[in-house]
Length: 293
Image (cartoon, rainbow, N blue to C red; front, side, top):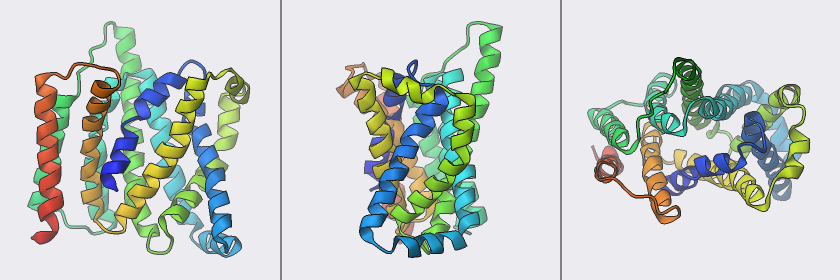
């Protein structure tokens, strides 16, 4: 499930790039989330006991508010705005902070153990993805200032993503993966909807200008990125520690390189192959031996 989730997340950059220019960054980050929230409502209604689940979620409204606002909203808006101000390569490099943030938050909130094997795997994965990620250099002082602001937003987005991954583990004690995802998305929707229309008042009108390719990218973000991948990740969290799940995020750049090679026919540099091998080795060692010691 973790492998499948990372494979789906790897396609986010391509989808966002296809939508850029036709939709604003906030609309790209939030509209697909609103769509999957409506779909989640329908799925919960089909399962029955919808009113009962809403009453149960209301008792944990503070927890869902924190997961939605400090987790999902911070992650999606921070990453989307940050990449639009900075570069995709900087976003790939800074996304290495997510497993590190996740490990620290998991030790703090969930009292998970930070063993020597886990620390070694995190650091080895960090080094491997550095080899996978190109380093971007700004060409002018003005561009540099704008890029620094974007990098800070990306870092904030990484913290939000790590916080959501860890905090959802606590909610999974009382709700299944679909319920946890829906109610946290609902909190994000209620809070962010007025903000979106205030900052991007023409966002609904811009939807009419999307091409079929862009609608496909939009559907990918809504169904597979915000929906299927997150359900898989939350299901996996029921079986493994958050630190283990966070370490699997190092696999995302490997899948990104593979997609670029298979779909776009981009060349793979030798250092990228080396980095991929290091990441795979660190992740497999962690998955194989962590619970055996």
